[in-house]
Image (tube, rainbow, N blue to C red; front, side):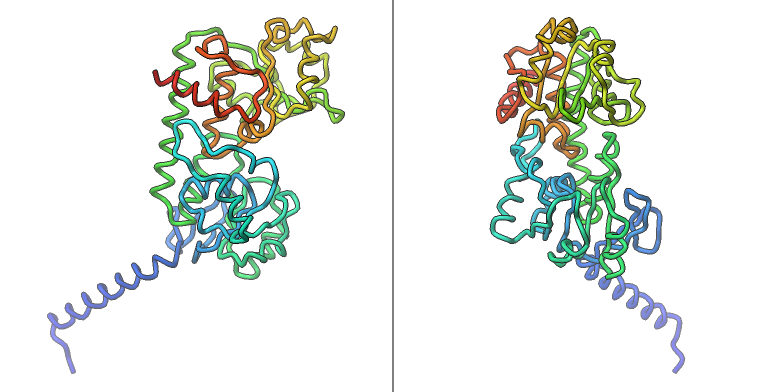
Length: 364
């Protein structure tokens, strides 16, 4: 039977309506996004096209990924996480940011077995990831095995890789990426905006001081049997962070992330401020002020040597929304003489007390 034009139009409209309804229904279960692609994919931090059909069960192979998922309100989606002791010692406080429930919610989930322990990040394998029956695996930017990724993908499990976290822009990218994967795009936009606002307040405070630019050395394990590592040009806690706050990296000549430096190099650099973000001990750091070779350093003479001990050391190195705390702690170390309260040079579990005082000061 031949249909007239009006009837044909009605059928076409009906088909479109049904299709749209179907798309909406499927959209709740099919979390797939596109970066200028039409094939239902996202482009992850490694430049790979990945299709994610569900994010109801997430396996996270990095504590940074885990915290960002929590910050986006996706805790209930976490089916398995890597368990590295230090990141889960941080306290649930980030200046200028809402409480994201990390790490308390993770520790609780591990305790009651609603979240599977996948083992350590550095030795993660497909076999352990599969134990939590994930819909999607989200990996950080480091320590990812191609063999593990291939094995998971061969079994139909999508793997999303974040960018390395050596820049603030990459942290923002990772938050937005994870937001797309787990269906929390608007939450990701909001979280990034909150981070920018909080970091902006800290940076503006340092600019308002009109202080001289300090020379800052950031170490890892000063005096360790394995050597003293200094942060260089490309490590976020090195040149990028120091420069952000108006200082100069004493080891800006190190072109990579970090490198071992000897005592002679430290003396030649003669930093105004020394921070060790993973100290061997308080005694080892204090020895800089009494050692015959290093006691004449500006940092030693002026008593500007600092250390972050657990859990503050974990908080200082979190490249997530928690990086706001890193910026604030570094600002306190670099401009201690501008604070209206006293700080202990060795931060431990008291670090959030100082962060709260600092946040009050820069907002007064």
